[in-house]
Length: 156
Image (cartoon, rainbow, N blue to C red; front, side, top):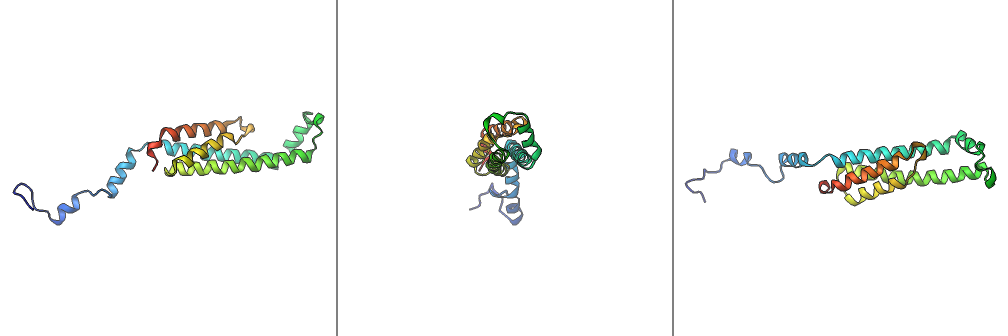
């Protein structure tokens, strides 16, 4: 029904009318979202990479274990070099697995998907300890979790 005050709809006026799911509306919605999930995701990715680098260095460097044995800390404990290597290998595998979960959480945060899995990935990164880097990956993971939680509304 056309009234006297409304002009008739033609093809050009229909094309100019923005639809709910049009690309321009999606771009406007994305521009309103904060960048915190992306920053948190990058932080979690860096944290996971640092954890893996740390444990690969420890498990593949024979000098590191020789240095620990040479300090005399383990002499009174009856721990052999093979035992120490086995412990470090187990810890390296465990921490690397945790680091993979941290990096998956970082990727999900960048994509703004699966909020709780991104949070859990960050929390797991806190417990994947990397002492050679002065626990920086754990601190970065904590920072990433805080940023993810603060930007919860940006996830879908």
